[in-house]
Image 1 (cartoon, rainbow, N blue to C red):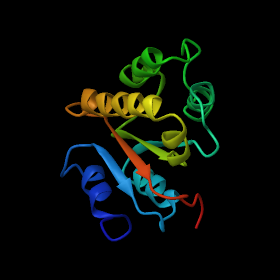
Image 2: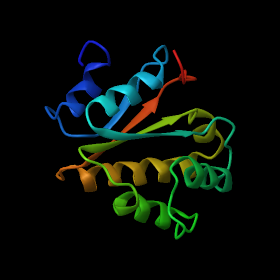
Image 3: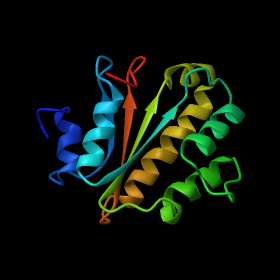
Length: 147
């Protein structure tokens, strides 16, 4: 697997390094990461934020893309709760969340983006020592969905 995806993700998927928040090269398709995760027995999801410039849009994208449970309240605490209670998202070995198109949101709402970064980092830390860790890829540039 190391040859097919960048080493930081390969090391997480094979268990040789704990899950974390990882970069993803702009010239690589995020489909490669999703395929590698699936092949390793991980569940994967993509949160596409292209065009999101406010909290309401961000929360709607989270609800839809991540298929969050009905009790998701579309606020920061509810997002944190959903990411630390993943009973609604079963996984055998782990979960991979790929965030794409995030740069525009980060630029348009830097204070909110700082909260997002904290929520994601806290969720990764929460699951780090479990049998089903959570890794987050922050795709650089306009990550290609396909080949």
